[in-house]
Image 1 (cartoon, one colour):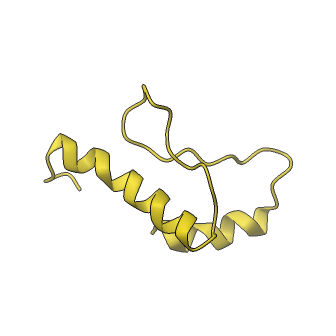
Image 2 (tube, rainbow, N blue to C red; image 1 turned 120 degrees about the vertical axis):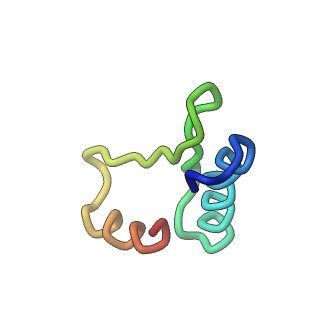
Image 3 (tube, rainbow, N blue to C red; image 1 turned 90 degrees about the horizontal axis):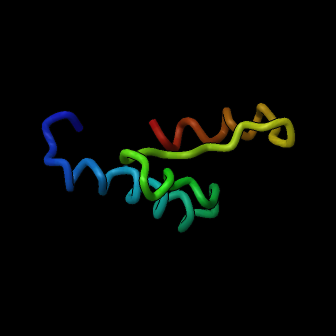
Length: 60
């Protein structure tokens, strides 16, 4: 990742989000439009800890 151009780095989170959505793993993970390339994962009180454990292998 570090060796990629800025445009290619920006594409990585989008590719991850697309893959997760296509597989119905999760939705709306893209970071905010004005934020650096990132994933935004809600971990509030309404989320089960087990769901996060299931998500992490997909991101790794």
